[in-house]
Image (cartoon, rainbow, N blue to C red; front, side, top):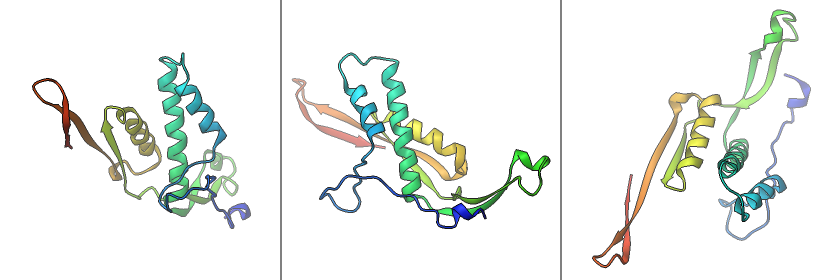
Length: 153
């Protein structure tokens, strides 16, 4: 293994809060800048979808780095054909056998869930990646007043 990976550790950059250990508020100027632009007056399609994709891919990367287990790997690279000894990557990688589930909260969560689901399938075992769906619909009475919601999925 390359010596730079012997003490490899990811550190989450987050803001202090009192919501408990299971809540993470990222301290990330890149993401905050994108979120500000997404929420700004005058931001329209196709920029909205591009910003949502950038934000969710960045958050997915953070979650994977922080929460998913890693393993040591020795992977033959394209350089190995010309340099057999140097053409091997040896270092930590995400354990691709880790099960992962994205949940689509229909409607506003459809695009973010799809972005994460698609991205996970590129570096995880696709047989271990699943997307679930939850639908929440308004219930109304005869006068069209909202009386509750119906959850399914």
